[in-house]
Image (cartoon, rainbow, N blue to C red; front, top):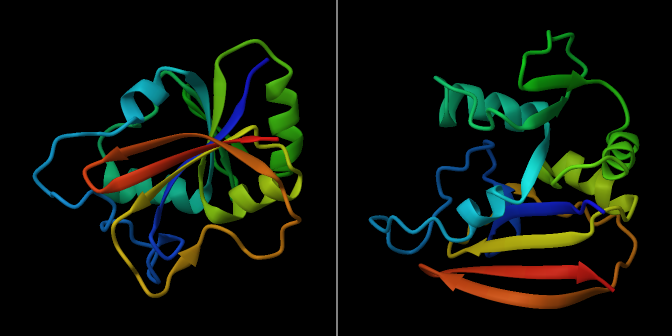
Length: 176
């Protein structure tokens, strides 16, 4: 069965973005390193990407304005805006958990919860995430958008792997 995976990076103090929503601080301790960590290997294991509108907007306006970075994947963007679907993107207004349950029951590769924090916390509250892959970036932001909203129940996890690359530490947890 497909896994629902949270693959995300946070600052050392737990933020997914700074107080203005920027992620330009993401990266290892050596800014000249070309090491992409586990991203390329992880990307080959998925065929579906789930993200919120703010993450989508940041991708298309700042990170990759010329081409959709997840071309060829099934991308679902959750928004209350009435946007027209494309070949690669389905815009959804509704319950992310229901969609995740539906997708998990279908054939395919794993499902990536890309962000943002609201989407992540809805999935955490439903305890539907099978694997947490959280990379800690060697930066302290002091404030910003926290990954966890502090309103979730206890979910016991098992650390299955730790990967260190360029000062970043990726922690991989499975549900117990």
